Amino acid sequence: MPAAAHHPIPSSVLRGLSVASLAAVLLLAGCGEGSKGQQGGAPAAGGGAPPPAQVGVVTVEPSAVGLANELPGRVEALRVAQVRARAAGILQKRLFQEGSDVKAGQLLFAIDPSPYQAALQSAQATLARAQANLAQYNALVERNRPLVEANAISKQEFLNTVTSQKQAEADVAAGKAAVQTAQINLGYARVTAPISGRIGRALVTEGALVGQGEATPLAVIQQINPIYVNVTQPASEVLRLRKAVAAGQYKRAGGQGASVKVMLDDGTVYPHAGRLLFSDLTVDPASGQITLRAEVPNPEGLLLPGMYVRAQLEQAKVEGAILLPQQAVTRGAQGDTVMVVDAQGKVAPRPVKLGPAQGNRWVVLDGLKSGEKVIVDGFQKLKPNAPVQPVPWQDAAASGAPAAQGASAPAGGASAAGAAR
Image (cartoon, rainbow, N blue to C red):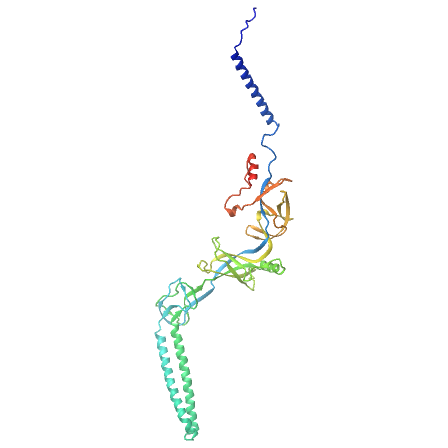
């Protein structure tokens, strides 16, 4: 067969093949590098060791901590007075507005005074007659005195005159007492407020016969500013506090009485703080409770007698104590511990001695020093022998915002977030 004829290839075609071949080679090289990187070759650019885990911490600051107990209690009026009718008669007028504040001595009711006015006038007339008799006998004694000295009259006659004078003086004294009694009875017809306070509803109406045989209740006045709050506390708790104070562990709170904070039935805090007056001398044998009485200002009249409240009493103080959130403390059979972060970011457990709880916090009595950092949040991030990065813990419940320490971040942005902090 004849040889194939040789036809020259145009230069433009050769240039096109060269470019296509070069692109195919670069593409294959890129695929090889990518598969090599996926199979455990060199790490990608920008990689490295992961940053330390962030944990929320609080810095220990010892201070004087008040030990407050939340106890149930009832509100009681400071003073209570029953307004009663001490004079018998028909009630004519009610001179106050029910539910209003009254002053001591203010006129509240008017009882028909006619019988008492007549009795007073009769007593005054009797007194006037006795005074006239006394004046007559005084003059007679003065006239007979020189006569008996001159033996113009007998001594017996003069003695009878002097005796009549003394009887007239007694009649005058009795008449004055009768007038005073009649005036008192007439005053009872005007019923006044015995104390200042808030008066309730009237227990009788106009036209009622009152005071007939006994003192009829007319109304009740209660003084409610300030007001008492009576709370009960277990006798064992009172004894424990007294022993701790006597041993020097606690200090008695307040020289003028322990501070008292009142919590209303709806959970709100009453705006005025009170003070503890005294604790009862006896223990209720049925419940083992001791009654304590606090005095609380009540200028707005929000607290009413009989109302149920809860009172927080600060009965003692601990010097150099520490308040920690309860979630920072691990309680176990071997004791109570917290996790402390040192300056190098190392984490170590620390045994602590706890006192009573104050709300959602523990009172730490011993085991921590000022300036130490205690972990509160981020326990799930802890790894053996791995350092951590402490950041200030934010109480989400107090601030109203969700905590940010526990949020995860992409690997590429973790170091930047840590650097920003």
